[in-house]
Amino acid sequence: MRKKHTSRWASLLGWLGVIPFIAAAIGSYSPDPMLMQFSAELGARYGVSIAIFLGAIHWGMSIDYPQQSTKWRLIWSILPSLAGVIIMLMPATASLGYVIALLGLCWLVDFLMASMGLLPSWYMRLRHGLTLVAILSLGLIMFRLSGF
Image 1: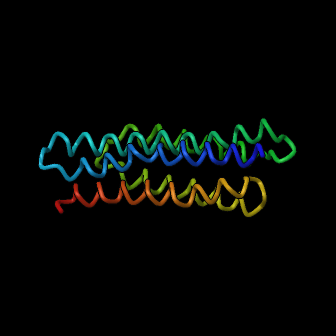
Image 2 (image 1 turned 60 degrees about the horizontal axis):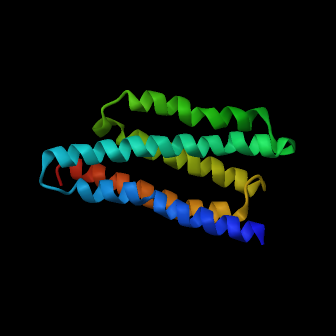
């Protein structure tokens, strides 16, 4: 019962967590240049914070399940943070592609970890949809900023 309860809360909170991505994508289609810029900032910066969170999950899993911990899992857990620092130094409009790539890489690593049984199955099912919405939203912002 506990796992089902946990995955329900994670699902609810995860889907609430994509609201900033969706809001940023919608806002980027405003005729107001300041709102367009704000939307790019929101999408890029929020995307970096999510990537950092996704890496940190592996640090937490290593603490909670030390028998499944490896040096590579711990190393991976900090890489999104390190990449995020570099991305945050870029202008938002220039960083959107890197944020998309980082979120995609986080998904790929999680997919591989899940295939090895190192993540719960409900987590990966949730990640598919959340990552898709995040990447599509950021892609829409990039498309809008390119002049369309």
